Length: 363
Image (tube, rainbow, N blue to C red; front, top):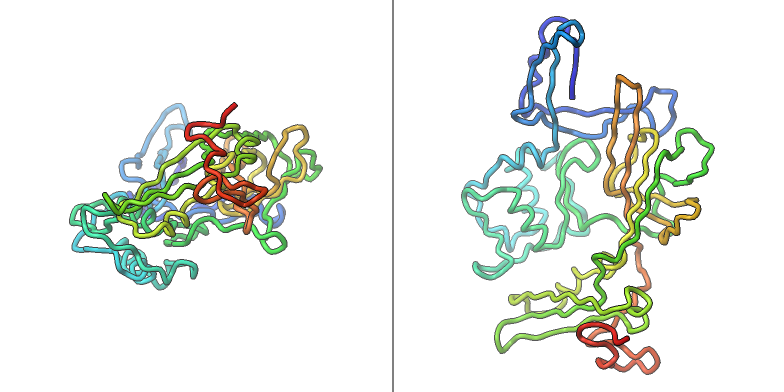
């Protein structure tokens, strides 16, 4: 960011690590979702603040330059664990409140824990078993939070609504037809000025596709395996091959936890939708977008979910744009075809391991 010129001294309260409320938007006549909106709570990055005088710009007036980033990148990244101990075995809501306070936030006003996860108990295991959530002096808070995310299958983040704070949930919300609200409808041929799309790009890829999985739990002679595979017809019509993934948890006593974290939708064909248009400050990650009309682009999904929103405001050109990245929304109760312990014969319902090869479909 760059600010100039100043009359007199630059503001004295703009220092490293200072809290910055970022607001962008059009004037009051622009309409709902477009006017001035607080979009982020940021902090001045240490090492970025500088004062500059350039005789070729603004007559040599003082320019103030600095960059900002979110709570995770500026503050959490510079905090280490002190006198903390074992997180495993704690109620998630209690652990969250304690950690929130340790990070310098007020858990009574700056913490939101989803009811879906609040009553979970964090898994416990002694080193060297996993997951080990025993935070030692000198450990990085970022690493500990990421370890808890993986172990408890939750999402931890900051500044969800743009007003700061910490949140914990079980991931992006699922789209429920007839219930979930759509924040934006994408129509390439729209005649409404605020909805005009400058550029739109769509990509469909099977690069991360996996249609067969082997789950392994236990140690040595107690080791057990479970195979999960899409039906032969589904695999042949999809990537046309068997693409395996092996998931091993030697400390697990049942397959339930592994199966709960396995998601065919996330390991299926991946779609990516990117578009640019006039600045829309009200659009945020997790919101749903409906594709109404994108002619000749062969878009598979119709409901997408925002994962990234980049806003650019240029005072010199008087332009303000949004670049939005979205992926297919997680649809509640989808019809997903797969079978346990091998490929299922769709006619008889019998398990038929011979219906698929261990390396790939037979041509």
